[in-house]
Image 1 (tube, rainbow, N blue to C red):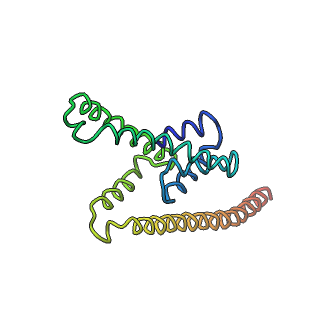
Image 2 (image 1 turned 45 degrees about the vertical axis):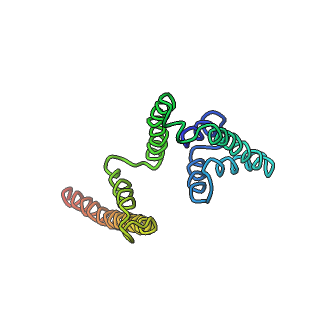
Image 3 (image 1 turned 60 degrees about the horizontal axis):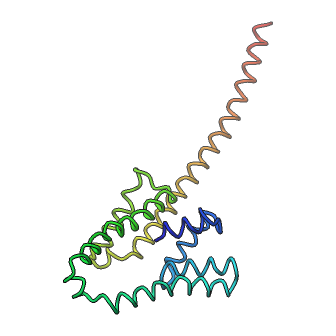
Length: 191
């Protein structure tokens, strides 16, 4: 779903940029409600204000509502189990659903600059959250740990940069003294 929304909003219609979409995606995921409705409402508001947001939200909700209503009226679980063709259709849909889940994960990983060196981090976090081990499986724990880890990496790089700057400045003053001495040695050779 996310890849389809991204293709329509960013690539095809150019309503927003890729970075803005990723920010909007993060906000839409943190808000209660359906992701597609949250994104549609924000895009509608950006393009046409309040009327645009209402129209976009209804345009996202109503088609799904009517489709699900029709399925609920005509397809009961017994009908699906007893009908071989319907069972085969639903079994065939499963790989497509997996692909629709994996595609945005890969796209988001590329945008987040996750590499083979760092891919273990989200995998371990997802595993620990899915194991349901009490406090260890709390997503809040990993959000706080990620923030603290990011802060420590940032501080490490800031200190490293400051050390380089100090060594560069001290190296300049050290280099200037020998060059004066070398000039003096050249002058002493001439005498």
